[in-house]
Image (cartoon, rainbow, N blue to C red):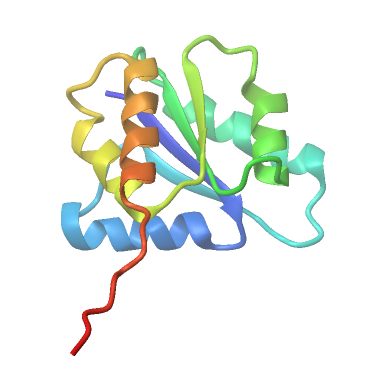
Length: 133
């Protein structure tokens, strides 16, 4: 099993997890860290390290991030970038999380799971075309 940590601004990660519970119920080794206004980078890095240390399994930890170049991403990479069994994916969205949750117990390759996350996230972004009535 792979650990999944969502690190995002405000309560985005927690909201994604709560929404995923409507489909999958509670998921083991799934946590969110909220970066709140005024929180220092060092505090955030320590929170990230502590959470991953609690959840990391032999198959690794997938860190899902909200925005490329944002503080949650920068802190995560500074805190965990040297760990081989940790992968980072930015642009987290609901379809990405749901696909990762459906695969995390059977996919034992963290790099493969990160590829699955990227594909699921990008495949589920589009524009709804209005019909001409």
